[in-house]
Length: 200
Ligand code: ADP
Image (cartoon, rainbow, N blue to C red; front, side, top):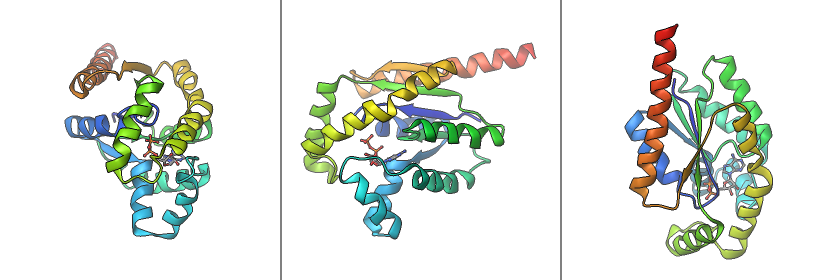
């Protein structure tokens, strides 16, 4: 199984890149942000609960995120792999994901970080705010989301670096160029796996 985490701050283009990766490598796309937005649109109890946090730019509590993630992932354990987009976002989530995947013998292969400078992130999100229709794309909330990213999500960089899975890609380029670099990282991983299996 090819399990990838696409990692990066709000506005880095994770969603756009995930859609392309999914198509090329035939993976299941699990985006916790999309999941919560769908529930908010349908105004389900889960959507109402998530909205309390999302509209403030805060993270949805780990227990809710994990419960939803597990239930969606477990329906696809026989797929060629997953791309996790917007998840994990805390160390607690990362440890829980490792445990879940280890139990099934399908660990994370790569964590691909899309790096974009802070000023550019603001420009992109506030620019799209007008037509994204997202209630969390206002200036004050974007500030909070970036702060939450730095405080709660950035510690994951060393978590995955220590596991030797972290690859950093420059996201300050055209979407096609960023996508090509991501594919190069994935293909390099797949090639190295092939070599290891040949040696085995
Ligand atoms: P972005 O990367 O632009 O912030 P997302 O769609 O990934 O967009 O997330 C939107 C919001 O949904 C987050 O600000 C957070 O409130 C909530 N959310 C999404 N994924 C998670 C997660 N793994 N843990 C906690 N909250 C999450």
